[in-house]
Length: 190
Image 1 (cartoon, rainbow, N blue to C red):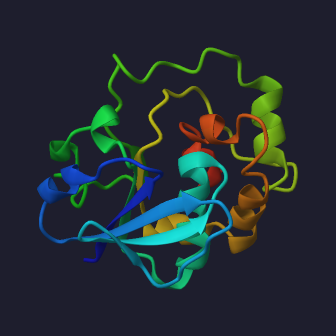
Image 2 (cartoon, rainbow, N blue to C red; image 1 turned 180 degrees about the vertical axis):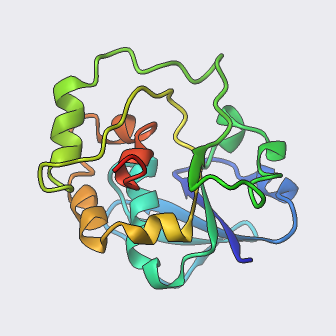
Image 3 (cartoon, helix red, strand yellow; image 1 turned 30 degrees about the horizontal axis):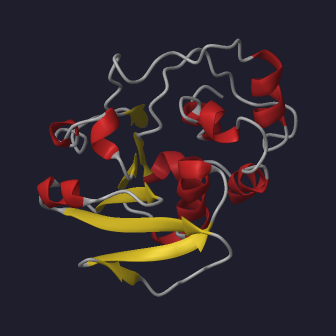
């Protein structure tokens, strides 16, 4: 089983990756203004791929889903560069045996508070366009922006849906809303 950790970074120190359990492939994206590098650079000794800025970690996760759709791992774990702020290395253990199609990882109540606003129109505006006006339901969520999903779950959604989300990555509260509504992006409750 192929397992991959996708790290959405900006300028964080990534020393924590030394503790990642064996068997996980590592992909690090660094969002930069106007730079796109298909060939990874080096950050210390870690290979990184520079991609266009926009949409915070959500934009980087979508970049990976869109550009690696044909070569996605069986399980992809999407995390922020400051992973330890929202999770622990031990959260990674056990993902492989989990039967759910996707799940949020490492929600820490002290750091990850519920979004303080009603989703209402913001949610509708974000999810309507990609889903042609008929998005799957979302429900409530906690902030954290770290999750894993199975390849089958990700690829059941048409590529056009992910591309439409990516088009909106610089709008309003895009990244904040996606932090806990990736289950809508993946069509879990469709």
